[in-house]
Image 1 (cartoon, rainbow, N blue to C red):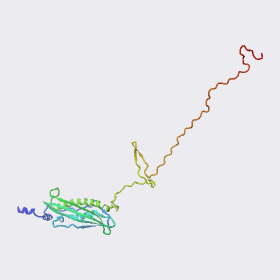
Image 2: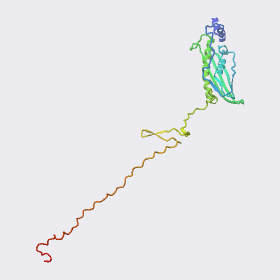
Image 3: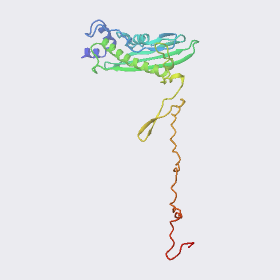
Image 4: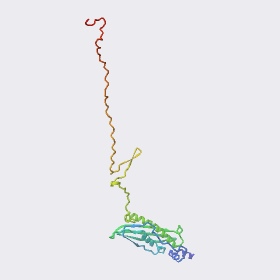
Length: 274
Protein backbone atom coordinates (compact mmCIF):
# COMPACT_ATOMS: atom_id res chain seq x y z
CA UNK A 1 0.00 0.00 0.00
CA UNK A 2 2.83 2.42 0.76
CA UNK A 3 4.28 1.81 -2.68
CA UNK A 4 0.91 2.62 -4.28
CA UNK A 5 0.57 5.91 -2.35
CA UNK A 6 4.06 6.93 -3.41
CA UNK A 7 3.16 6.36 -7.07
CA UNK A 8 -0.02 8.41 -6.97
CA UNK A 9 1.79 11.30 -5.36
CA UNK A 10 4.54 11.39 -8.00
CA UNK A 11 4.55 14.63 -9.99
CA UNK A 12 3.34 14.65 -13.55
CA UNK A 13 6.79 15.70 -14.72
CA UNK A 14 8.05 12.22 -13.80
CA UNK A 15 5.46 10.74 -16.15
CA UNK A 16 6.78 12.99 -18.91
CA UNK A 17 10.31 11.70 -18.38
CA UNK A 18 9.14 8.10 -18.48
CA UNK A 19 7.21 8.80 -21.66
CA UNK A 20 10.24 10.41 -23.26
CA UNK A 21 12.34 7.35 -22.39
CA UNK A 22 9.90 4.97 -24.05
CA UNK A 23 8.05 3.93 -20.88
CA UNK A 24 4.73 4.69 -22.58
CA UNK A 25 3.23 3.02 -25.61
CA UNK A 26 1.95 6.33 -26.99
CA UNK A 27 2.94 7.75 -30.41
CA UNK A 28 6.66 8.34 -30.89
CA UNK A 29 6.36 10.95 -33.71
CA UNK A 30 4.09 13.97 -34.00
CA UNK A 31 3.62 16.06 -37.19
CA UNK A 32 4.74 19.67 -36.79
CA UNK A 33 2.01 22.33 -36.95
CA UNK A 34 1.16 23.79 -40.35
CA UNK A 35 -1.26 26.70 -40.84
CA UNK A 36 -0.28 27.71 -44.36
CA UNK A 37 -3.62 26.49 -45.73
CA UNK A 38 -5.55 29.09 -43.71
CA UNK A 39 -6.40 32.57 -45.08
CA UNK A 40 -3.58 35.11 -44.94
CA UNK A 41 -3.98 38.30 -42.90
CA UNK A 42 -2.21 40.92 -45.03
CA UNK A 43 -1.37 44.09 -43.13
CA UNK A 44 -0.50 47.48 -44.60
CA UNK A 45 2.90 47.60 -42.88
CA UNK A 46 6.43 47.33 -44.16
CA UNK A 47 7.65 44.66 -41.70
CA UNK A 48 6.48 42.18 -39.07
CA UNK A 49 8.37 40.85 -36.06
CA UNK A 50 7.64 38.23 -33.37
CA UNK A 51 8.36 38.68 -29.67
CA UNK A 52 8.05 35.74 -27.24
CA UNK A 53 7.33 37.05 -23.74
CA UNK A 54 5.81 33.81 -22.44
CA UNK A 55 7.59 33.13 -19.16
CA UNK A 56 7.74 29.44 -18.24
CA UNK A 57 6.97 28.73 -14.60
CA UNK A 58 8.60 25.78 -12.76
CA UNK A 59 5.38 23.75 -12.95
CA UNK A 60 4.76 24.57 -16.62
CA UNK A 61 4.52 21.39 -18.71
CA UNK A 62 4.44 23.17 -22.09
CA UNK A 63 8.15 22.67 -22.72
CA UNK A 64 7.64 18.88 -22.63
CA UNK A 65 5.09 18.93 -25.49
CA UNK A 66 6.25 17.59 -28.87
CA UNK A 67 5.65 21.13 -30.17
CA UNK A 68 5.61 23.67 -27.32
CA UNK A 69 2.66 26.07 -27.61
CA UNK A 70 4.85 29.16 -27.99
CA UNK A 71 6.58 27.58 -30.98
CA UNK A 72 3.19 26.76 -32.52
CA UNK A 73 2.18 30.42 -32.06
CA UNK A 74 5.33 31.58 -33.81
CA UNK A 75 4.60 29.26 -36.72
CA UNK A 76 1.07 30.64 -36.97
CA UNK A 77 2.32 34.24 -37.02
CA UNK A 78 4.92 33.52 -39.72
CA UNK A 79 2.48 31.66 -41.95
CA UNK A 80 -0.62 33.83 -41.57
CA UNK A 81 0.52 37.42 -40.88
CA UNK A 82 1.90 39.08 -44.02
CA UNK A 83 3.54 42.51 -44.28
CA UNK A 84 2.03 43.90 -47.49
CA UNK A 85 2.75 47.62 -47.14
CA UNK A 86 5.62 50.03 -47.61
CA UNK A 87 5.95 51.71 -44.22
CA UNK A 88 5.22 51.10 -40.58
CA UNK A 89 5.61 47.81 -38.73
CA UNK A 90 3.67 45.13 -36.91
CA UNK A 91 4.79 43.37 -33.72
CA UNK A 92 3.22 40.02 -32.79
CA UNK A 93 3.80 39.36 -29.08
CA UNK A 94 3.25 36.05 -27.26
CA UNK A 95 2.13 36.93 -23.75
CA UNK A 96 1.32 33.45 -22.47
CA UNK A 97 1.68 29.86 -23.72
CA UNK A 98 1.32 27.54 -20.74
CA UNK A 99 0.11 24.05 -19.90
CA UNK A 100 -0.18 23.18 -16.22
CA UNK A 101 -1.50 20.26 -14.22
CA UNK A 102 -5.05 20.70 -12.94
CA UNK A 103 -4.98 17.65 -10.69
CA UNK A 104 -6.26 14.15 -11.31
CA UNK A 105 -4.35 13.90 -14.58
CA UNK A 106 -6.15 16.91 -16.07
CA UNK A 107 -4.24 19.55 -18.01
CA UNK A 108 -5.02 23.28 -18.18
CA UNK A 109 -3.79 25.19 -21.25
CA UNK A 110 -3.82 28.96 -21.86
CA UNK A 111 -2.65 31.11 -24.76
CA UNK A 112 -2.56 34.92 -24.98
CA UNK A 113 -1.15 37.08 -27.78
CA UNK A 114 -1.45 40.64 -29.06
CA UNK A 115 -0.56 42.48 -32.26
CA UNK A 116 0.65 46.09 -32.34
CA UNK A 117 0.67 48.32 -35.42
CA UNK A 118 3.28 51.09 -35.41
CA UNK A 119 3.60 53.99 -37.83
CA UNK A 120 6.80 54.85 -39.65
CA UNK A 121 7.88 57.21 -36.87
CA UNK A 122 7.16 54.68 -34.12
CA UNK A 123 3.72 55.94 -33.10
CA UNK A 124 1.12 53.43 -31.94
CA UNK A 125 -1.61 53.10 -34.57
CA UNK A 126 -3.54 49.89 -33.81
CA UNK A 127 -3.91 46.97 -31.45
CA UNK A 128 -5.54 43.52 -31.38
CA UNK A 129 -5.39 40.79 -28.75
CA UNK A 130 -6.61 37.20 -28.50
CA UNK A 131 -6.98 34.77 -25.58
CA UNK A 132 -7.94 31.08 -25.54
CA UNK A 133 -8.02 28.38 -22.89
CA UNK A 134 -8.61 24.64 -22.96
CA UNK A 135 -8.61 21.81 -20.45
CA UNK A 136 -7.77 18.18 -21.09
CA UNK A 137 -9.42 15.62 -18.83
CA UNK A 138 -8.39 11.96 -19.20
CA UNK A 139 -11.18 9.83 -20.59
CA UNK A 140 -13.16 12.72 -22.11
CA UNK A 141 -12.48 11.63 -25.69
CA UNK A 142 -8.81 12.64 -25.90
CA UNK A 143 -6.00 10.22 -26.69
CA UNK A 144 -5.12 9.51 -23.02
CA UNK A 145 -2.40 7.11 -24.20
CA UNK A 146 0.71 8.91 -23.03
CA UNK A 147 1.55 12.27 -21.55
CA UNK A 148 3.29 13.59 -24.66
CA UNK A 149 0.30 12.63 -26.76
CA UNK A 150 -1.99 14.46 -24.33
CA UNK A 151 0.17 17.59 -24.46
CA UNK A 152 0.25 17.40 -28.24
CA UNK A 153 -3.53 17.00 -28.49
CA UNK A 154 -4.17 19.88 -26.08
CA UNK A 155 -1.79 22.15 -28.02
CA UNK A 156 -3.57 21.32 -31.28
CA UNK A 157 -6.96 22.14 -29.77
CA UNK A 158 -5.75 25.46 -28.41
CA UNK A 159 -4.16 26.40 -31.73
CA UNK A 160 -7.38 25.66 -33.60
CA UNK A 161 -9.14 28.07 -31.25
CA UNK A 162 -6.37 30.67 -31.52
CA UNK A 163 -6.43 30.68 -35.33
CA UNK A 164 -10.13 31.50 -35.26
CA UNK A 165 -9.80 34.08 -32.49
CA UNK A 166 -6.83 36.01 -33.89
CA UNK A 167 -8.47 36.24 -37.32
CA UNK A 168 -11.69 37.55 -35.79
CA UNK A 169 -9.92 40.11 -33.60
CA UNK A 170 -7.69 41.42 -36.39
CA UNK A 171 -10.65 41.81 -38.73
CA UNK A 172 -12.62 43.55 -35.98
CA UNK A 173 -10.06 46.00 -34.56
CA UNK A 174 -7.49 46.34 -37.36
CA UNK A 175 -9.80 46.27 -40.38
CA UNK A 176 -8.43 49.61 -41.64
CA UNK A 177 -4.96 48.03 -41.86
CA UNK A 178 -5.99 44.99 -43.87
CA UNK A 179 -5.31 44.83 -47.61
CA UNK A 180 -5.88 42.23 -50.29
CA UNK A 181 -3.25 40.53 -52.42
CA UNK A 182 -3.04 43.57 -54.71
CA UNK A 183 -2.59 46.02 -51.82
CA UNK A 184 -6.11 47.47 -52.01
CA UNK A 185 -7.70 48.30 -48.62
CA UNK A 186 -10.28 45.92 -47.23
CA UNK A 187 -11.59 48.17 -44.45
CA UNK A 188 -14.23 50.05 -46.47
CA UNK A 189 -17.33 48.41 -47.77
CA UNK A 190 -17.51 47.86 -51.50
CA UNK A 191 -20.39 49.71 -53.03
CA UNK A 192 -22.02 48.71 -56.25
CA UNK A 193 -21.92 51.35 -58.95
CA UNK A 194 -24.30 51.46 -61.87
CA UNK A 195 -22.80 51.68 -65.36
CA UNK A 196 -23.30 55.09 -67.01
CA UNK A 197 -25.69 55.31 -69.97
CA UNK A 198 -24.34 55.96 -73.49
CA UNK A 199 -22.93 59.37 -74.46
CA UNK A 200 -21.76 60.06 -70.89
CA UNK A 201 -25.19 61.06 -69.60
CA UNK A 202 -25.81 60.01 -66.03
CA UNK A 203 -29.17 58.63 -65.13
CA UNK A 204 -30.68 56.79 -62.22
CA UNK A 205 -32.35 53.49 -62.94
CA UNK A 206 -35.93 53.78 -64.02
CA UNK A 207 -38.58 52.81 -61.54
CA UNK A 208 -42.05 51.50 -62.07
CA UNK A 209 -45.24 52.37 -60.29
CA UNK A 210 -48.30 50.16 -60.19
CA UNK A 211 -51.17 51.61 -62.17
CA UNK A 212 -54.25 49.52 -62.15
CA UNK A 213 -52.28 46.34 -61.55
CA UNK A 214 -49.73 47.05 -64.32
CA UNK A 215 -46.25 48.55 -64.28
CA UNK A 216 -45.59 51.74 -66.17
CA UNK A 217 -41.99 52.85 -66.72
CA UNK A 218 -41.04 56.37 -65.66
CA UNK A 219 -38.34 58.61 -67.06
CA UNK A 220 -35.10 58.35 -65.00
CA UNK A 221 -34.07 61.42 -63.04
CA UNK A 222 -31.58 63.55 -64.95
CA UNK A 223 -32.26 61.90 -68.29
CA UNK A 224 -33.34 63.97 -71.28
CA UNK A 225 -37.06 63.30 -71.77
CA UNK A 226 -38.04 62.01 -75.16
CA UNK A 227 -40.02 64.41 -77.30
CA UNK A 228 -43.60 63.24 -77.68
CA UNK A 229 -44.58 61.97 -81.11
CA UNK A 230 -46.58 64.69 -82.85
CA UNK A 231 -50.16 63.71 -83.35
CA UNK A 232 -51.86 64.25 -86.71
CA UNK A 233 -54.50 66.98 -86.45
CA UNK A 234 -58.03 65.73 -86.36
CA UNK A 235 -59.85 66.34 -89.64
CA UNK A 236 -62.05 69.44 -89.51
CA UNK A 237 -65.54 68.80 -90.68
CA UNK A 238 -66.53 71.27 -93.46
CA UNK A 239 -69.37 73.67 -92.59
CA UNK A 240 -72.73 72.63 -93.88
CA UNK A 241 -73.26 74.01 -97.36
CA UNK A 242 -76.55 75.52 -98.41
CA UNK A 243 -78.28 73.64 -101.19
CA UNK A 244 -77.83 75.08 -104.68
CA UNK A 245 -81.48 76.12 -104.88
CA UNK A 246 -84.09 76.15 -102.26
CA UNK A 247 -87.52 75.15 -103.36
CA UNK A 248 -89.84 78.19 -103.21
CA UNK A 249 -93.41 77.84 -102.06
CA UNK A 250 -95.78 76.91 -104.80
CA UNK A 251 -97.44 80.07 -106.26
CA UNK A 252 -100.55 80.08 -108.38
CA UNK A 253 -99.91 80.33 -112.11
CA UNK A 254 -100.65 83.84 -113.45
CA UNK A 255 -104.04 84.14 -115.15
CA UNK A 256 -103.82 85.24 -118.71
CA UNK A 257 -106.53 86.55 -120.91
CA UNK A 258 -107.70 84.16 -123.53
CA UNK A 259 -106.68 84.88 -127.07
CA UNK A 260 -108.85 87.45 -128.85
CA UNK A 261 -111.78 86.16 -130.85
CA UNK A 262 -112.39 83.38 -128.55
CA UNK A 263 -114.36 85.26 -125.90
CA UNK A 264 -118.11 84.54 -125.95
CA UNK A 265 -120.52 87.15 -124.63
CA UNK A 266 -122.84 86.07 -121.94
CA UNK A 267 -126.12 84.68 -123.07
CA UNK A 268 -128.81 87.30 -123.88
CA UNK A 269 -126.33 90.10 -124.58
CA UNK A 270 -125.64 91.54 -127.97
CA UNK A 271 -122.07 91.83 -129.07
CA UNK A 272 -120.56 95.40 -129.18
CA UNK A 273 -121.12 97.29 -132.47
CA UNK A 274 -124.27 95.66 -133.39
